[in-house]
Image (cartoon, rainbow, N blue to C red; front, side):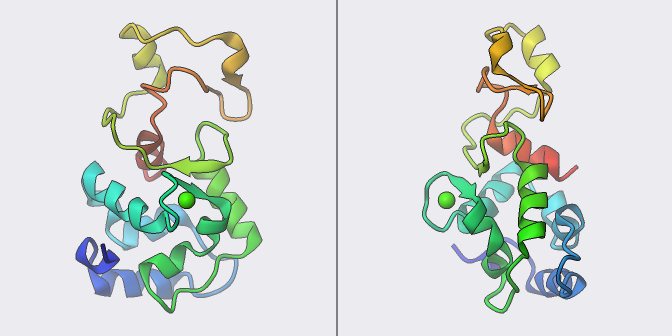
Length: 151
Ligand SMILES: [Ca+2]
């Protein structure tokens, strides 16, 4: 699927132009300009499916580096600094990659998940760096984390 069938080509160009300078990339603003923020979780998933070049179900650091090329062929590569900052912001479960599995479309907080009787995460699964539990995958769905990283 082409990115242009999900997003508006003018918006893509505007977003790429806004961050043309190295180390200026701000993924939240980028997604906002490109129109992703107002898209449904389904469309967001489509976009991330396009960016998952090797169809691994995750966007790894390598793919993230070329994320702008997924939006337009002439998009620049992200710098290492930008790639790492983006990964850190979007990788909510701290596994070093961004998941795009959209099977669970809830966007509940961990707290809500716990209240609703999801398996109680074990303490050793607590990720101090992200203040989240890595277990209870039902709620720590990666699409959810993508979506919440846009907020
Ligand atoms: Ca991948």
